[in-house]
View 1: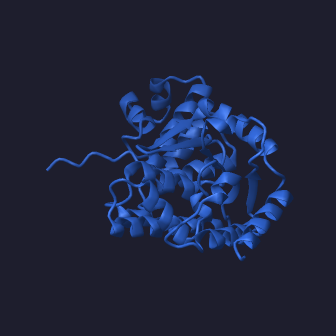
View 2 (view 1 turned 30 degrees about the vertical axis):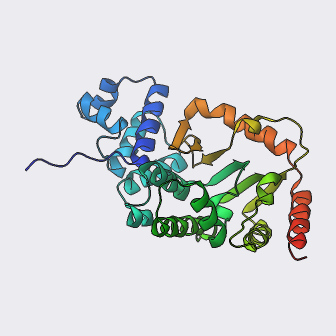
View 3 (view 1 turned 120 degrees about the vertical axis):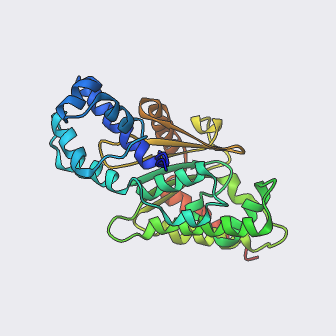
Length: 288
């Protein structure tokens, strides 16, 4: 019976793309790099295209052939090779979570930092259960109540990256003030609870929250929201762009404009202190 084809997981794609970039930087062709490992060119080509796995020890040897000895780089890529085929907790929801969403959760779980610009909704890592259910139900056009409940569970489960032992995710979230003016007719207390959640998470040492005021000046974020996920070197930044049809990713040099855009958005937004003061004021307004 023939072997099943290897599924090119997002981790394996990131590893392959990084190894290709490092090979090119070393000025080596596929055949030259493969020969240094005692391989044929097609094997390395499959590794770089995420269609074949590579052992952590071979990653180390390949990096040595490329003249790379930085222990942090070697460790990062060895770990990525080791974890490339692992299934995450989100696989339990494979019938609910789309492949593009699963890819993002995998990226989020591996990331060191995420910078999110969210002009319309509060970022998923900062949402309450009620807010998650209401917003998922509001934007979906085909999900059943059971599927909406499951997707809300997934969204809350993702938040564990903020408290993971040893290396919690560093999150910098910039939210437009308009997103905090949302009203929920079915459960009016939803936004008050959500504002309180923002206040609580903003106190975490690894979480920074800023507000973009209603009367802000023009800035690059007016073109839409995005998230920047950063990883240990030498892996490049990955940009997530979401829409009704799913998610799209931007990597490598193409991510540079988004990094610059986030810096301008951050400079345009209220300061961290003023942002928290405004969120607190809005939360107090829900008590009357």
